[in-house]
Image 1 (cartoon, rainbow, N blue to C red):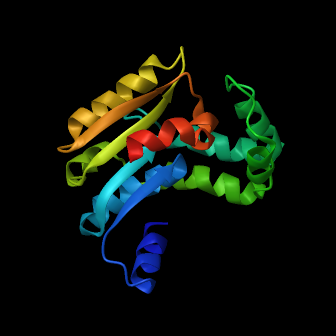
Image 2 (image 1 turned 30 degrees about the vertical axis):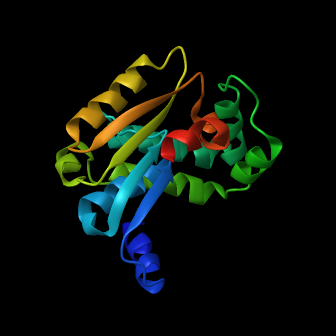
Length: 178
């Protein structure tokens, strides 16, 4: 995925960009920053902070679950954890993802280089923008820890928002990005 990002930038003849990645896209952004830091003028990780204790087996179980139950079942379960129902357009878009492609994103996380040993390479301004519900204090603490680890980063909470809401509630997420 990193090679794809760089190929798109090269094809568009774009030198440096501010990359905004949501969920898995943020993980791709972290990897681009670690391996091609000169290409990023800034980085926003929207509702995604790597867990230093995460094991690849956990991501592989997610891939297995998607293949066994299907994309719709996994997305519907995630949607039920949100404090407000996701808009139908978002659910339909996400649920239309082929299970093999969705499972592939979990596999990508299982095989990605670990974030924390590479964190010192993320020298560009970085924003961790995190949906933080009432049961997400560990999540918020991880975001703050990541921001303290990087030389030019900060974490901003999106209070009361779940993972999907952090994406579609642009009324809350865009102001800190701007």
